[in-house]
Length: 261
Image (cartoon, rainbow, N blue to C red; front, side):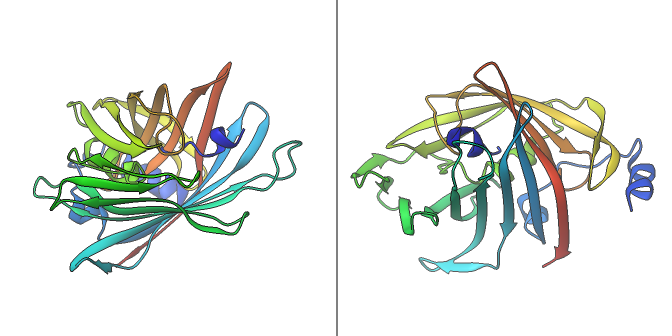
């Protein structure tokens, strides 16, 4: 159940719907996406069970290794009212920046396991001078991996996927997780669907299909998935459906806030 909860990706109702109808928006750029501070809150469900909640926020800029980085935090909390679920409170952090191709890449990623009071339980550090990735996993093992660009720890799928949503070109991102590297592959489409979400009401959305390669675990979920993005200039992530067991885990946007940075 914990793994299901950790799947990310993995956002004036009637007035917005009217202005968005049949509108055309260019693909967002990295600069556009980080020009606003967004806070997203998602509900995670499996069948009739509400497994928990995911909150994603872009924090203030951070200076790391002499370079200005964006700081993304994802907070995940389980629904302790579900039998056998227990209390899980995990915070995931990423320092990332835009490379020369306009793609976000990771410099530092870590996980804080708050319910067990373990800070930086997992750490992945990306060194582009030596083309290596140093890691420390939750079992205490440390090691080194070769760096493959555009290298990420998966957490910034939240920004990477939005750059291509609504386009007609496939995209892929390497993900370093569980002492190895895998890939998330996206099949994007310019086709629009009518959908409805609590923060926006009835809207038009792009649907992206995807699959993973050599991945398993949070921000490296395994299997096929579908994701929906709002038809706007930010491609707000609205929903993701990931195949698990005999059905789908559904991660759905329930709150959204935005302000200029």
